[in-house]
Image (cartoon, rainbow over all chains, first blue to last red; front, side, top):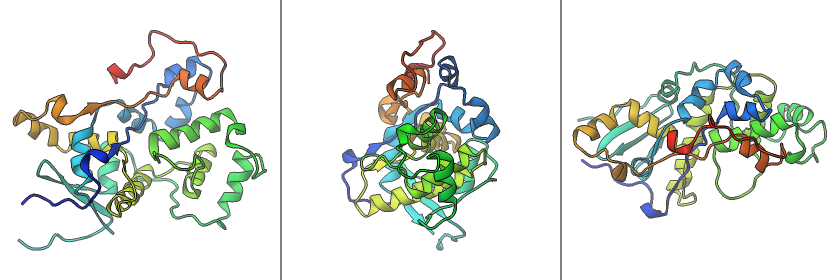
Length: 70
Length: 200
């Protein structure tokens, strides 16, 4: 059975926000070195993960049917 | 077929008919993150850590503008607004929750990012269901979860994984040019090694 939509906003009206990848090497070359801080705070793997594609249509398909259970 | 058992905060949906469930643990697995560190949500104005935020980030003066914060702190705020919790529209001022995230990062305290992202996603979905929010949060994170959850593999086997069907895009890169745009440096020095959106 296909999961029904939970949102009434039209599919095409949604704007998928894509997190910005960070070029830490470029920041360092321009005198802003934050890589060590992010590594120390165990966040660097998150930033590494941001270097990848976003599948807008799949994300919208997920979003319009999403429900929160809390 | 009975009702699915409910255990903790989770998001349930489906993509192209394939059920997907997201929890804090699923997010943590997406980028191999141990769930340890600070987490405060629905922060109230009387939270004493907000005074610590003012002391450290705003140099003790609540009237200090965000552009007058230390350069490193401005970039940490940029990470929060562009890489963690994108808001879209409205005020540029960070919420009380995000002020504490900035304080934790600036004071070298680890945060439980998967828990923050889970709460942010749940908030955004609830707003969408109410018809109040058209922005879809965490597009890249959700795509990574779909990818690791074998969804893409299934779509590829069904020959449904073309860029046109998936709607493949990449995010706007934060780099030295960003420092120039927000006037932290005067002139950006490009380099052939700079990351490009086509290679992200």
